[in-house]
Length: 380
Ligand code: COA
Image 1 (cartoon, protein in one colour):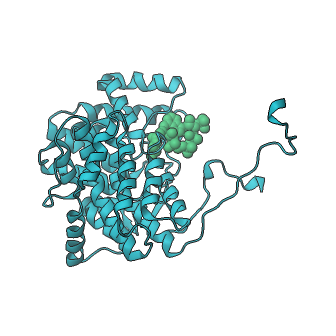
Image 2 (cartoon, rainbow, N blue to C red):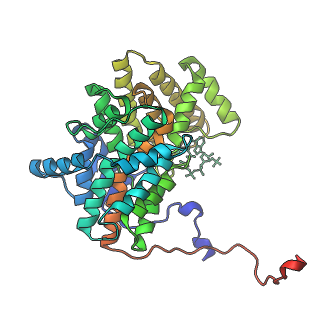
Image 3 (cartoon, protein in one colour):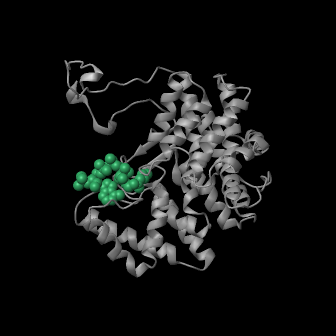
């Protein structure tokens, strides 16, 4: 058994899926066979969510109906707002999200109904409410009035509206929409695997979502975005980027937003985010954050890829730093925003797991002592 052990389950295949395909060497990502570049160009979050959950692109009527259902479920009740108000002010938006979903679970009439239809109903409710919870938490925390959702706006535009109290322009709205779409699904990443494990015990969807939120929160997963944002603040200007990055490399520190367990070349989502950051910089008539990011990328590729031969390229999180600067999204919300997109993938994977379930229960390689003598507590 020992030779089969893979630290961090690296390269271990732990599930069969029809949801996404990754070619980490060539930097290719597909959702249900559709290339991520095409989806980012032509689709939106609602359509991609439909694609993931139902296995095919919707026709016009199906998309209209799905979109209507999602938009009608955006509101959160007074109970959630009350909870958000009593949460300590210093908690992370991810903690607020997890607490709110736990509360909503108790109010959901379908809570313990694990049929496909009930899971889609619950998936719609949770997916629709995620942005509202995050925006409401942020506003209450900062002593501002909660802004109710606007059903006329897209998923992305509505989130920015609830956050800032102002309808975003087309470029900003498209950037937010693309962010949700690009993070919607990514095979067996840590949080999705966690969610699948939870439903493999035939537990409920809300529990799986809470598990996913917990796993996504860590700095090696969704938490990297906030670190990238802080790095941009520390670098301050493009001419300081090279020295700053070389300093981190000399100290043996990891550069946040770079490297990936699966991609050993450019993460295709990073390239799409780079273009979004460029457009936002142009829209804001301020290229500072975009230029700093470009310079960081150039230095990391030169120092780690070209000189040291390590495949450390920008991942999905790197250019979100600049994107969030331009969208005026504070760093403490960046992981929760990742969750707003990833919920589509979590639900899709849970549906897939329920439809052909076998309990996920791997083995551990025991690395402790044997035959220990039990010594009574008074004698220890
Ligand atoms: N900066 C510098 N070096 C990095 C690096 C980074 N961001 N990511 C990996 N490396 C190096 C490691 O130091 C290690 O070098 P070594 O073999 O000389 O010791 C090697 O690459 C392998 O790294 P490891 O951490 O074992 O890879 P992993 O597959 O376990 O981890 C990540 C993948 C994503 C956790 C890792 O790349 C990382 O921590 N990146 C920064 C955090 C981040 O952006 N996370 C978001 C992921 S989408």
